[in-house]
Length: 197
Image 1 (cartoon, rainbow, N blue to C red):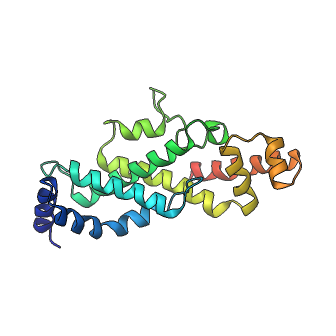
Image 2: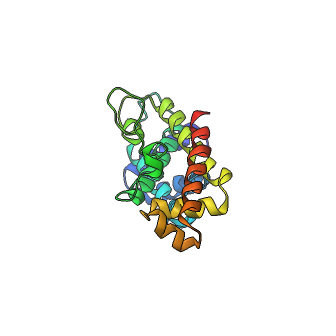
Image 3: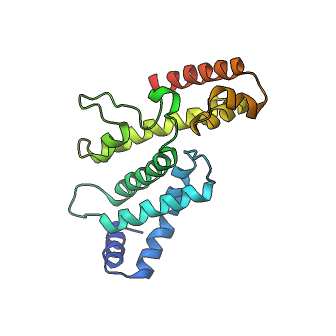
């Protein structure tokens, strides 16, 4: 599909053409699936994340401004990633912040305003290209969680994120509290390396 044809479909979608919308949603579904597989959402399965990503894709079609100096695939990617990140943030709201805030998606950004990483990405402070780069860095952290933690450490982290105390986690995984403390320290160490890369 060439760019002119795609722009025509976007315009038609904005005018409530359901067939044009369906064509675009089907075309970019692969992008949604790819991005959703980079994330882990406690208490949800892959299809839940895909649905969130599809909402982001729908918003990108609705909000795309062809007069802006950004191509649609790049804009769609940003919207999908933001929607997925928002879903993760909503899921973790009210729970213990991951690893003393140091490693969470809501951790304080290194800026003078002291906002969160997601607040920073949601603001107009970054260009669309820089937002993509920052989101990819966050994706790498989540990828590190999946690839570098043992099954036991992932289990401990999941309980920790759900607000369980060390002794409660120990009871759930049938280990002693010292073992849980050691696991949390290993998790912090491994994810610190991922963030510093």
